Amino acid sequence: MYNHGVAYVMRIRNGFIRSSGNHTFLSKEAREILRQGKGYRSEDAYGDGHRDFMKVITHEVEELENVSDLKDMASRLNLHPSSSLAVVLQEIENRFGSDAKVIWLTTLEGVKQYTDHPDTMEGVDVYRIPEGAFLLNDLGPDGQLFVMTALDYRIMESSRSPYVASMNGK
Image 1 (cartoon, rainbow, N blue to C red):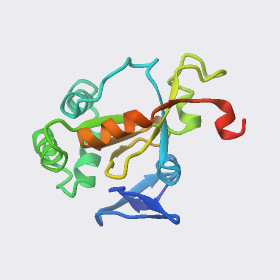
Image 2: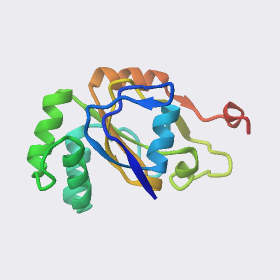
Image 3: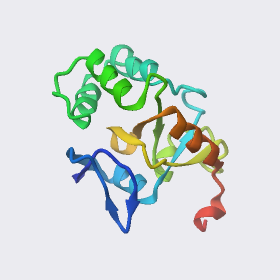
């Protein structure tokens, strides 16, 4: 299911992914999103606007008890896998700023489980992943969590477009 890959994605050029050197395993879904430079999202499942990195990551770890996600995030940040939530959050703040943003994205196939309209894809948006985005968590078919600076997020948000079947030749 997983192939060897890299965690820190700056830009995919000519089929190569540049990285900070932290090698980790990437799901086929993460490789697809990174290769295409875009991901899909529907707000139908969880509502709109959950982008504050501290709130989202704290919710994932403390409310949903996704401890394996915390270990994955720590490893991708070149921290010890047993690093605490506070250490992970501080590292993200150090790298991306106190106003850093996160967003869960998935593949075109994966987003169908998160939309109320999988037949028409109404409410599904396409996001271009900005050059400075960092793949923080990879849940395979369930999605990929990207963290970025607030500026990169504004750039990404301005590139958002509704999914249109004809965009992909369907």
